[in-house]
Amino acid sequence: MQSWQCSLPFPEVNVIARMASSGVAVSNTMNDMNFPTIFSITEDEIDLNDLLERITLDSTGAAAIFAGMVRGETRRGNAHDTEYLEYEAYIPMAEAKMKQVAEEIRAKWPVVEGIAIVQRIGKLYPKTPTVLIACTAAHRDTGVFDAAHYGIDRLKEIVPIWKKEVSPSGEFWVEGNYVPKAGE
Amino acid sequence: MNRVKLLFFATLRERAGAKSMELDIPPDLTVQGLKDKLSAEYPNLKASMSSVLITINREYAFDEAVIPQNAELAMFPPVSGG
Image (cartoon, one colour):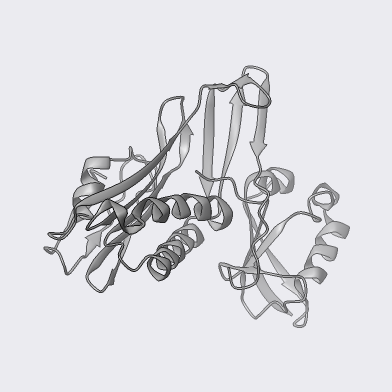
């Protein structure tokens, strides 16, 4: 995010969140064995290069990145066009649950080095990236692809974010179908 | 009475017509009791209560949970981020 600034060199990761003039730009980090973890809900454009740089260590040789974007034309299932999506989040809880997802990734794939989980909110138009999950590791055969896959699946299950779809035929809230269990 | 804050998101916010409200509730009220109370007092919310998710202090909570003092509660549909 252009609005973030690192005040200390890595590995004492300490990111200061600056409120963008457009609204919410919140970031957090945790320092888990000096592995950087970034999780945030933002109204700003997702800056892949910046995020990737911040989760790349001297020992990193691979990153698995998942990005989701607004699909303008849906062909699978109920075919329709989308004008835009409007996202909202319960920001403090969403960031806490993103941190939890990162902790789950680390428990399952201890080889993962850096993790970035970012969701953009607000009104987003087709082709715009809305979410990014990136995991880094020393090598590509370490499970790092699975780690990123797990991250996006869990975000869609437990992180309190919602989107309203606006199409030429009207608008409706997209609702998930996952019911969190105790302790999630 | 126990004063709590209740936040609404997505469809629940639209049906409630508000982002949040403050409520005075009995000290032993459970999540199920809260749902019953809201269904009775706010007919617009009644249809949502069977599938709604509820959090207490930013953690998912279930029907039998007792709502603690000064809790921050939230009510929303299953999430759809990404």
